[in-house]
Length: 79
Image 1 (spheres, rainbow, N blue to C red):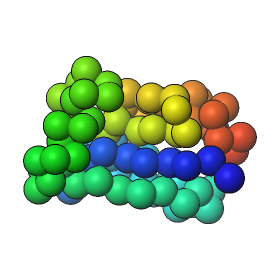
Image 2: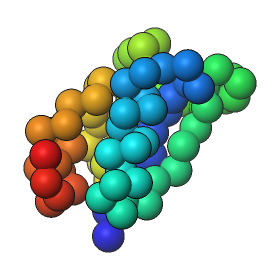
Image 3: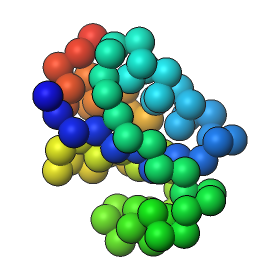
């Protein structure tokens, strides 16, 4: 099973779409709320070079935004 983490904010539409997509496909994930957690926010920027969310990590692959086809490919689930 792949390790999936998502850096998100509660008000981010695409973050919520990504989390719902993971739930629908039974993909376990760890969520980091970067609106409240400054340490995780700094970690997200260091890893991705991005301030925007979502930033999704699948094992060692970094996905910027809710790129459903790429996530499906990385996770081996339907797009």
